Amino acid sequence: MPVGPDVITRAAYVHVPFCVHRCGYCDFTVVAGRNDLMHAYLDAIECELRRELKSPRPVSTLFIGGGTPTYLPVPALERLLSLLQAWLPLEVGAEFSVEANPAGFDRSRMDVLQQFGVNRISLGVQAFQQETLQVLERDHSPQDVARVVDQLRQAGFANAAIDLIYGVPGQSLEDWNASLAATLALNPQHVSTYGLTFEKGTTFWGRLNKGDLKRADEELEREMYSQGMQQLPAAGLNQYELSNFARPGFECRHNQTYWRAEPYFGFGPGAAGFDGRQRHLNHRSVTTWIRRVLNGESGIMESETLDADLAAREAVMLGLRQVQGIDRSHYQSRFGRDVRELSPIAFDQFVATGWLEATDQSIRLTREGRFVADTVMSEFLVP
Ligand code: SF4
Image 1 (cartoon, rainbow, N blue to C red):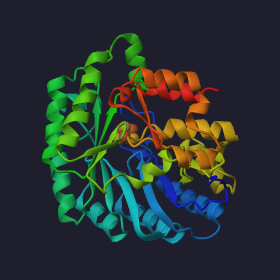
Image 2 (image 1 turned 90 degrees about the horizontal axis):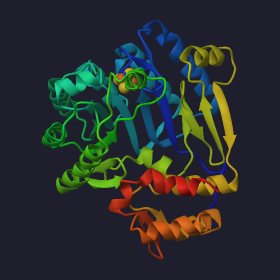
Image 3 (image 1 turned 90 degrees about the vertical axis):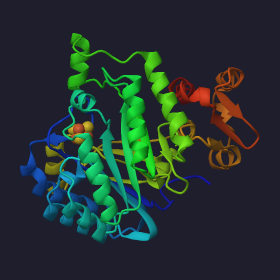
């Protein structure tokens, strides 16, 4: 079945750009020390919801990310959640996620989230060693994490996700294994493990080029990723995507929308939206986005229409991220051809090297293939 503008969008992402300070590696749309913009930001969110949706649109997944959504003071958080309740009401059984930073995430904010139906908290923990957190310029301590997880349970949240980062300068394999162990001791429903990247324009990028920071050794990073793939499933958190692990039934349904190349709304500065054919990207400058939206203009900075070929290629790139891979007959009926037809030579070569596993039903990366996922996926992206 082709996905297009006629397909109902049932997922929405809302970006909250505020943080206490900008961490050195952060490449997200963030403003630090600009609490003065919070009021205008909320006014703009209200305008953008009204302008783009026209009438309330029920969703089955809603994700508030950032930035640090839980940095908003309680009254601002209540206003944001009231707006979303009015414009993006939750369907029965919907997943409602909010990203949180352990620093400053207190019981009063948890109670507000709980009142508005938030049922999944994604905690940016990153590491359990103070030194590693300091390198990353995070402002929480390992003790904050334990406190927050405990309070979340008391507040009635049954679905907590923990994000970790490996490949941090100075982080040893022992540190990483200790972080995995500390994470498992907290018994989360979901864990994400991300390799640190040095993005152009970040402080880390500048420090890397000055020789002030050193990338982790490639072999060490590989071993860290491998340890996650070994230890998390052994504790009942099955890998379902390159970077994501979950107890059965706790896979992040919102992110699965992206990997399945299904449509989603995006609101707030820097947010992306997709209607099945067109992809939109909002202005990344928070002040520009606010000014435009409050002036009655669109907050969208650029739109791209995916032609049939690009849509088919992107769906492979995204679908291969999932451990279950791509369902061949579903893909055939949606895009009118088989995955192999996109890049037959590369396809056969990856199967021969043991990076891709192809059966009549599905195509997926092997365990070995997950280490070289970028190489494999990029071959399918280019015609
Ligand atoms: S807390 Fe997260 S979003 Fe905010 S600056 Fe740090 S990495 Fe970026």
